[in-house]
Amino acid sequence: MPKHYRPAGKKKEGNAAKYVTRSQAVKLLQVSLVTFRRLCILKGVFPREPKKKVKGNHHTYYHLKDILFVKHDPLLEKFREMRTYEKKIKKAEAKKNKDLYERLRTRKPTYTLDRLILERYPKFVDALRDLDDCLSMVHLFAALPALERENIEVKRIHNCRKLSHEWQAYIARTHKLRKVFISVKGIYYQAEVEGQKITWLTPHALQQVLPEDVDYNVMLTFLEFYETLLAFSNFKLYHSINVNYPPILDPQLEALAEELYALSRYLDANTRSSHASGSDQVEGQQNEKQHDESDLRLAQLQHQLPHNEPGVLMHLVEDAAGEDEEDEDTKECKNFFKDMKFFLGREVPRESLLFVIPAFGGIVSWEGDGAPFREADQSITHQIVDRPTQGHKFLSREYVQPQWIYDCVNARIILPTEGYLVGRVPPPHLSPFVDNEAEGYVPDYAETIKRLQAAARNEVLPMPGTVKEDLEDPQRLLVEGIIDRAEANEAAEKKRKMATLEKQYHDELKMELEGAQYSSSMVNQNIESNAASGEAREESVPDLQQIADDSANMSKIVMSRKKRRLLEAMEIGKKRKQANVDLLNERKKKNEAGQAPKKK
Image 1: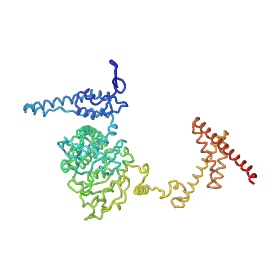
Image 2: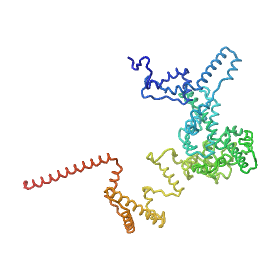
Image 3: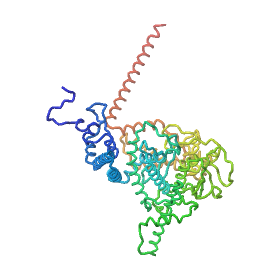
Image 4: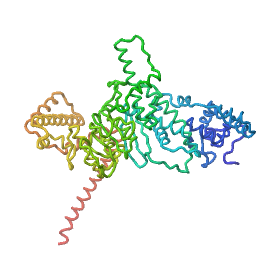
């Protein structure tokens, strides 16, 4: 009899009925393996691991309900239609019918993934939770070169670059960026949008080498879905701040490859136009006002902005969203680099700094065409350079390395620039995603930053070798001159009252365990006596035995009845063993005392 024998007429049960192998799923859907893999990626269907693998461990299993879910999707019929159409094009090409071939090639059937986005993400919060991989993939392809043999088209690269810049412009505009970390892989960013923390990775601006052992068809299928998801997310986010989408950029800046700066100019123009209409509605000067402005009006506003206007990139979003809607982190990030102007050198990661500095309220420019202001501007406070030496220097500004920006952002304080000057080895770049206390190792520079943060908040930290409880002792603080005598007396009085209440609690607990009634008169009497004793002496020597007994009784009260009886039985057993040991020792002493005269 076979291993998995099933009598005729008996239906499948258990894992054999719930799961199917990949080959069975392909046969059920009647598609090729490439189309099946593409459908699974777009629909969000992934392999499962059943408890019992009926067909063996070397197969890939899918849930039968997932396969039926894919089977009834309209996208499957669209793929079949496209496959049939490709056969028609090949047939016309083989018969050398040029007219039919050109007509068929220009009328290929297309499809959209809008319905799938709504199906997989019913709410916008669900889409935000799934944006981590989406942003990392889009930023990756935005930095890759176009390659025909891998079907990586120039049009797709430009679309990824456009979507990534739109996302960065929104984050910088609304000051939602929270953490930045530079690693060997690339630059990690973390933003907080509508309460959701979104982390993504951006590759370094270097020439990318495409490895040959990667299946780019699978990655392109994921990218196809992620492009649609990010476009819908950008549309929703831009409309949340009253900005039309898609944006219309300045063609001159686009030609100079300054899309992020052009997006900031667009946001500034749209913000001004929306505020002008809002003020007109409040004053009542116009009875009817259009809610959506035309693209021509936006383009006109775009060209009205001068190209060298200082701070155009950094006009903040207080116009679009009221300050009441901003949380504390957003307000802090909004004013972090306030009244600071930065100028970027040619050798620094310009695209990253153009994203980070405006996100924290700074004004930035660079060397090249289309820059808001030039290097000779006397109002520049910091110049970011990454070279061994700096020849020509302006005395009115500081020259620092790019790491200073990222460390300041992560520490949320303006760090001293001495360690980041030109030509010096900067301090270690610490990751804001690591909890040093949980890891059990706190770097020295992390301790330095912690003390600088405490100094900025006017807090007092314990010195090395002491603990935080030492700061709670008013006498120690008085000796060190941190507080005055009145505050010390007040703290001592508060400490004395707490000790009195604690002793009262222990007395009540003791009386309750002994089964005695603890009346209110006894409470008042104890309070008076404790107060009198407290006035007589500030510090009383605690009864260690009493504290130990109270803690033991307290632990017994918390226990369940079964555990309490078990503990009592263990204590009785210990007492019996100790009694036996004492009895044996006493007999031994008597025997020794009786044998001593005989030896003499």
